[in-house]
Length: 151
Image (tube, rainbow, N blue to C red; front, side):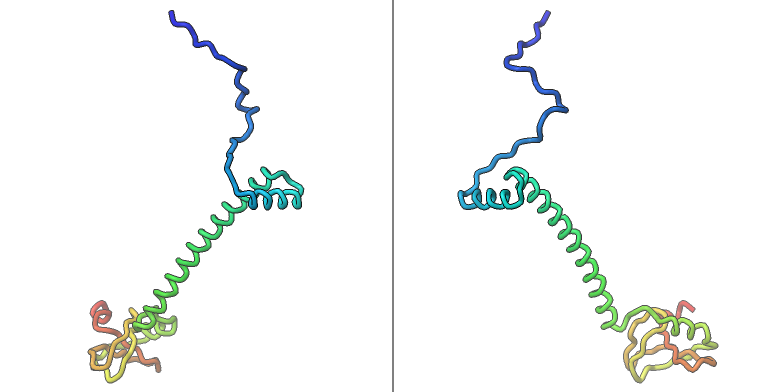
């Protein structure tokens, strides 16, 4: 038969009655005085002041990080849009989509100047072969050969 080990000292305090964890650190005298002055000014203890500062700092850092992520995503999205626009690629406008529906026939042509494909938005350059939309609509409608092969 084994005996229970004998506990020395007083009985442990129940979990519900225990205080929060204690964290200690050494600080220079100048910082210690600054903390005491700030605590006195705010009418709180130095411990409470430090708890408040730590909590506020972590909240602030979390907010800065989430805002930085959001800003980064926005900047990336905008940079990609600008790059696509600079390359002559972009989403076709509603007017261009409507013009596509009014085309009766497509004529193969060689471009004399740059034009944008009405379907994919790719910039077609002078000298490139393309398709020109013929129909009642007064708008000029151009398709690159890649989009034209999908018709």
